[in-house]
Length: 289
Image (cartoon, rainbow, N blue to C red; front, side, top):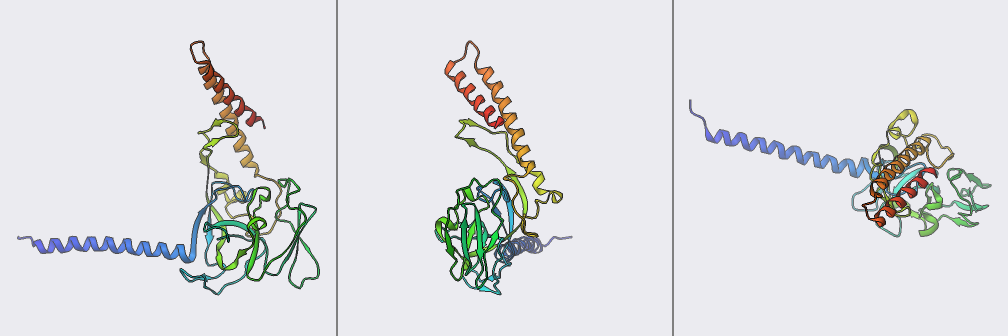
């Protein structure tokens, strides 16, 4: 029996061709899904606390408000967001994507009262209605002042749920409806980690971990609060998050105390001893607070 070298080369080329075709199809499908269907985003700041925490990774529905023609501002079958929706969009002052909650729609008159309350009068509406999303004990007060805004046509007034620490429409103006990327609807992963707390002067490298409770549908954190039912904010952080932070801080307090004890023997440098003790004391004060 004689083997045909040409036949062997043909089978090798066919295998390579199948691999290349599979990769090309996978790339095209991924680009299609990312452009038209769903895109993943990571929350980098605390401006949406307590609804979204730093390290949450969310899915954003790209076609919720219409289909965008790639590389253009043209949107097909577009529809207007609702008050309370959490959207990803491009703000007017930067090319980075932001995530905020929709407060005012085109034509709405927004009035801040008593420095903590938001009241909205829809276009042609008879009276102002209270917007309760951004209220709760985490609001320090004297945050809003007493101002009144009228949302222009084609624009949205957006704010972060953690409005005491949020850069939003109060500072850089209204968002353009044409620049909406989509609606955030689901937390698919949540990763917590500290790198360095410069205010306290101590480094924490032990708090990396998965927030499993935010991935548990029985706790109600898989579906982003406010997507299915509109409800007010009751506390700054969910109870499991507070317990998690407290346990981690106590663990770091003990760890730095042990490290300070090792560095404060008679044969060690006293300046290193003082620094270690200061770091331990800062961590323990943080745990107590």
